[in-house]
Image (cartoon, rainbow, N blue to C red; front, side, top):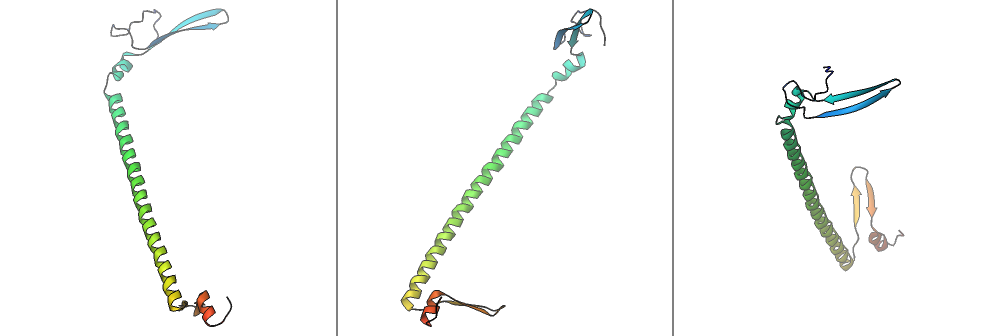
Length: 131
């Protein structure tokens, strides 16, 4: 809408909530241009939409934080469980080695699919073979 008068008053009789005055210099002419918000724009700022968007953003942020916090806690629990299983496996291996040394026995493994027989170093030593 073009209004030649620079009154600064909108259609409703109240001044616009946002306005700017700018000077444009062209060769031979100088122009003053006023930019101002329309009454419809001013009314849209009075709605609850920005508040609803802000609250929605906060809710999404909180939910994302909770998901990340839960995943981090789950990762720590899984790591502790893996550490416990690894320690139990080490203890079992150590006990097997001690029992094997005490019994002076070795370990062999037969793969039934390939018929491949594998001996450990102690089995080779018992039968006088080199590793």
